[in-house]
Structures are given as C-alpha cells and as structure tokens.
Image 1 (tube, rainbow over the protein chains, first blue to last red):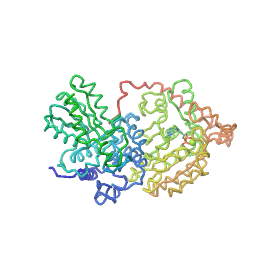
Image 2 (image 1 turned 45 degrees about the vertical axis):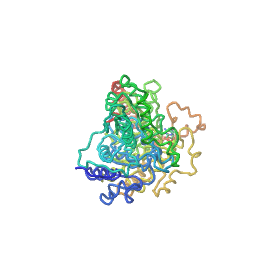
Image 3 (image 1 turned 120 degrees about the vertical axis):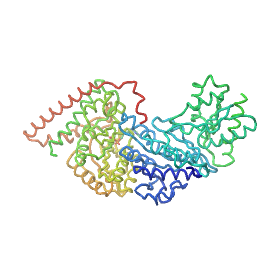
Length: 326
Length: 311
Ligand SMILES: Cc1ncc(C[n+]2csc(CCOP(=O)(O)OP(=O)(O)O)c2C)c(N)n1
Ligand SMILES: [Mg+2]
C-alpha cells in the first residue's frame, strides 16, 4: 500500500507508527506535545498517546539529550527532537562525549537505542544560526548512525529504521523538503540501517547527493539530458553506515564523480566521499572529482546573498559540465 | 547496618584508593586517577538508602560509589590497569567506568554531564513504574555547569525520582569554591528549581544516610527530586600528580583529624579499636586478593580495538 503524503506528514506517520507499535518509545522536545511541533511533525500525537508517551521539555537541549541517553541505557527507546539542527551544537557534549561513546566504553555492556530527530538546512531569510547542515560533525563521530532522508518515503522508512535501531541515530531532515509530496509505502517492512540508492541511472557521470541536494541533482540531470549528458544520481541516504559500494559501482560505470551537499565545502562529508573515491576508484576515474557545496561562509539571511551561497540544481549542472568536459 | 559495617565499607574504599596510589607509583596504572580519600562517608551513607535496581551515577572521583554499590574489586583494579576487565574491557579505565550489573550507570569525566544522564534513568523509573530511584553525585565545582542546571530544572518539572548529592570538598581542581560562587552553600541554589535541599556533614555516614534516605523516600513516593549537599574535604590531591601547592599550610593535617575513619577511631575504646584493627587487616587482605586477581586478567586483544562501536 502506498499513500501520497507530504514529507512532514510522512514523519508524523512514522512517529505514530513508533508510539503505536513499540511501548518502549517515548517522545520529547520543545513544543512537541500540546503544540504539535513547530512544523507539525507531532500533530495529533499527544491527543492520541497522552503525556505518558509524548511531552514538552524546557528549552534545555543538553538536559534532555542527556536524559534521552540515561533513559535509553535503562530500558526506554527515546526519540528526542532538536527543533533546528543548529541547536544540537549546544548539546554536543551529550551527543559526542556521552551518547556516542557509552556502548564502546562499556565494551558493549550498555546500549543507547535512541533517536535524535532534527531538521536542517537553509530556508529563505533564515540566518546563520538557523541554516546549518551539520551532518559532517555527526558522521565524524564514531558510535552514531546518521540518516538524511531525501523523500517522503525515506522520511517514513528511515525514521522507522532509526527507532528500531539499537544504536543511537541522528535523523536530519530537510526543512525545505517538508512541503514536498510523494508516495509513501506505509505498509513496507522496516528496513535495516544503511544503504545508498541509485535514484536515476545514467552513463556519463555519477552525482552523489543526500538530503535536499538529491532533488537538485535530479533537476540538474533533467536539464543535462537535453544537452546529451546522461547523469546517474546516487542518493547516499545514510552517512553512517556508509554504503560506499553503491558509489564505487556507479563510478565504475560512469568514470566520473560529482559530490553535492548543502553544507560548507571544507571538511564537508563530500571530502570523505572524494577521498574514498580517490583511493578505491582510482583506476575507474577519467576526470577529477568535483565537489558542490556552500562556499566557506556562514549562511547569510538575505535572499540575494543566499542565491550565490546555497547550491542548487544549476550549481550541480555546472559542476557536471566541467567534469564531463575535463 | 551498624557502625562496624560502615567502617568496613569506608575502610575498603580507603584501602582501595591507597593501594591504587601505590600501583600508580609502581607504573601499573597508565592513566590519571582521581581519589576520594576523606570522602568515603558520602557514598557509604548514601548507598545505605538504596536497594537493588536503584541507579547510581558518579564522577571520575567515583571509585567509592562503585565500591559502595558492590562493584567487583578485582574488576575495578583490572579496568584501571588497562586490562580486559569484565567491567569495561579496558575501554573506560579510572574516570569513566560503569557496571550495568550493579546498576552503576557509571562515572563521567565531563564535569556535570552525569546529571542529565541520571535524569534519564529517573525518567525510565517513573515511566515504567519500577519504583527505582536515580542517585547522582557531583562535586561543588560542577554546580557551575549548565548541564547540571538544565537537568535539575528538567527533573523538577517532570517530578522525577532523582537525588542529587553534591560532594562539596571546597575545591574544584585547584580553585576554592568560595572564589567561584556568591552563595555560601550550594544548596541555596535549590530554591531556584523549587526543590528541597539539605546540607549535611559529609564525613558522617549516619548524617548522609539520614538525609539521602529522606530524599530517596520522597523520590519513591513520586514527590520529585531533592538535593543533598555533603560537606567534606579531600585528603589527597585532585589527581594523582597534584602536589597541592594551592592548599594553605595545615589544612590537610586538620582534615586528617576530621575525616570519617579517623573520627570513628578517635571515639573508640580499646575493645572497639581492636575490632577496627581486625577489620583493617581483613580489608587489606581482601584488597590484596583483588590486586592479585586483577594482575591475572590479560590485556585486551589489540584485534578487538574496533569492537563495540555499534551494537
Ligand atoms: C567540562 C569539563 N571541564 C573541565 C574539566 C576538567 N576538570 C576535571 S575535574 C574538574 C573540577 C571539578 O570540581 P568538582 O566538581 O568540585 O569535583 P571534584 O573534583 O572536587 O570532585 C575540572 C575543572 C572536565 N573534566 N570537564
Ligand atoms: Mg570539589
């Protein structure tokens, strides 16, 4: 069965599924219960499940992420919501020093089955403190799984996967995708973690993207097809576990690689993909690897400035053209 | 539990820390160690209020809490020796060890970070109706950490079964707490969270047990968190290599007259003294047995260094 849902509705459906089918789940964050979430992700959940299962917290990201960890270690399966990914930075100790390390540092004796749900990226007029794409920080941290759903269906499937995972998972959605609509397989079995996906087959060049940049890459591929360039688009979906095999197999077919993300260029996860490809796909590559990213500036708020900072389909198309002509 | 039981447990902790110091000096302990000599009455008194299933969270200065909670002595030594201990397989060492088998959520080497985590253990207890409580210990300096503030307010508004024990040894590392806060007692901060708090003599296990029992009872009946500030003194440096140049002359000598084991001995008659001597001898033998057992634990297999990052 497949339903047509907006991305944000798919998130809501996955959370409904989680609270309904797993009595050990509990949901908390700021304005999530009575108000239904700042973007409506938790609309109706409090009415249906009550304060026992979903509740509002004080504005205390460190406090409630630490609480999520302690609850996860002692038997619950918390889902904690960070309203904007930017606010995760005030709770980095709990994420990096605590949540990510306890399983390893106890030689596997404690588990931390929790989900940190957040949304990230720019939107028109949003300032530098509400526009970060911090996925590389989390992917850099051993012990965390990192999921970036690019479609309504993945918003549903990957969040459910995160909920049943026994490892801590950061699920970073893209606010700009919330209104987008697509088919969602609401009766699909829960998928295992990980797995990149070829979302458009092509022969000339591989574009690896995630989150909002997947749709930008697909748009670029449409434009480039008219110019006779056949683009293969890989939606990486999970940065951890990283499915590099799917990337390598694609590069083996196309011989060219462009990596696209909205996060800043330097130290972005694109650098990791490029480094791996340089090592593992060396003999397949016929052109230098290209990276599409925001330049190394904090995100400006004015749309006129965002227009030259935020990578879009045209930015991807330019990079592909340069790569194919190289 | 009577005075002799308290003495035995406190002596076990003291002897453990002293033996650990000797092992450190002998090069058998690779990392840094933070000892609780002089503060033993706090974990011993507090754990008297607890039962199986109650969680305890401590700091890097948490060996006493682990021992008071019944964590295996040989396991503790082996872990601190960097061996493949049954506790944490050599991945945690002295400042971050834990033991789920003894409900010991563990130490934490990030100041204050254990309080939000302990709040989570309290959340589980509340939501599952287990009747358990969550006790967390921090130092005086940790009261200036944002994580403690956030967690206390969170626990307060959720009425969680949390008991915060502040071990006020009047120093955070090398700085006096009186230079770091404008309140006389840290317990005054409790009013800001709408929580009850008490200040107790942290060198008296009975005083600690009485205050923590009151807080634990309150937590168990669903009336929310409490704070117990236990006044104490460190007999040793902040960490193993601390020469304590910052402590005024005579301070440590005076502390030695007030520390919990000395107090019991000062008040003891000849008969009690003989029994305390016998306990000391038994504890020393027990610690030696644990050291011998720990030395027999192999070092972790380097091939396992990447194991347990994920479930
Ligand atoms: C976040 C953080 N900042 C600084 C340190 C370094 N540090 C370790 S212990 C300590 C002092 C803490 O003092 P207190 O809370 O009074 O505990 P005590 O050591 O006296 O038991 C400091 C600053 C740390 N481990 N973590
Ligand atoms: Mg102190």
